[in-house]
Image (cartoon, rainbow, N blue to C red; front, side, top):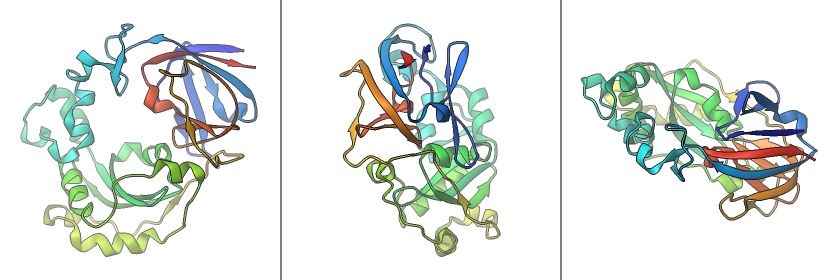
Length: 264
């Protein structure tokens, strides 16, 4: 069976374990069902997620020109403390910025390879944690806009990491910790503007991934260097496909690439 389509991050369903779906042209693949099967992945062409043209992808699924134009790639995406929609100030597209920034956001602790602090829209819980490969997570504050979440994350980053060690995450070198205790210890560092939004009544969310075998020595599949690859899928964690030969493929890193996938 053969599929073709432009890569976007896999859609997920919060089940035990997580269900993954890869959307292709006019169809989708229920990825859990092909774990244990041999598959072929082949690069076909580029398709910018903004203009749709066959132009080399620069970053985040966009060609060079669109990356510097579309609001979905503006600086406030990665640095929420730069959000200005609450001030009625436009960066690239005020309508879009208000739609995304002026809604409830969560600052959270997640544990994938280590404890890290992060920000996401409330509507993206627990999707954001799944995409990061976190096996446990907990909310710290729920604030009414992205700016407040950003300055809270910025303050907490002084006391806890804000990056995931993706290699440790994929090798499943994890340690269960009491995230509620860590959340409580961080409360005093929350900025005054966000103190009223602190959450102290919730419990950890636990996440299990469909993995038959974790890799020992990681090899990353790079479509620019290896445009065609065959391998037996052994699991999925975060947005990574894990293969029997210890190759891992980060689907999200290759958004905007059109690929052909075939079950062998």
